[in-house]
Amino acid sequence: MKKSGSAVWSGGLKDGKGFISSESGALDNIAYGFNTRFEDGPGSNPEEIIGAAHAACFTMALSGKLGEAGLKATALKTTAQVSLDKVDGEYAITAVHLTLVATIPGATDEVFQDAALRAKLGCPVSKLLVANITLDATLE
Image (cartoon, rainbow, N blue to C red; front, side, top):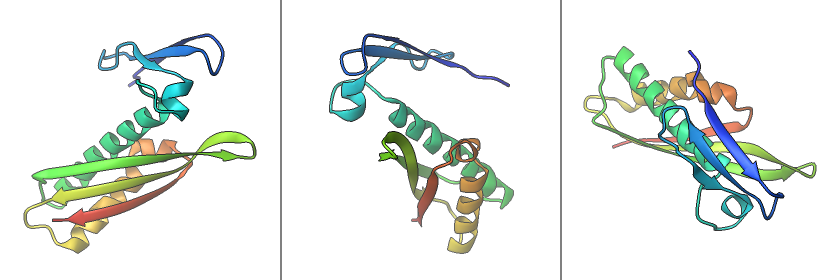
């Protein structure tokens, strides 16, 4: 299975602009540029999209791990905070912190934490990222 996304760019690094699209059309010419990545300009940026993708992937993986334990969540809310830092003079994604708040009837914290850890390690986006990935998981 292959999925694709695309980006177009014109101009220099600081004065240029680009647009991001996805094969499904969910992203359709979404603006991005230096100002959306390093300042507060309107539009998106690659780190924000990676964060959304990681949060979605992890949350789906967790749903699967919970199902293996005979559990079904009524709510899973995940936020992925992506850190973009300068390393040796170049920008790098150095960490991703996942924050999860879950409502899972009948779940014990032990089973929940185990499922969350296995989802973090097994999610395809987690496997893709070389950054340090941390997780705070709260069962309500």
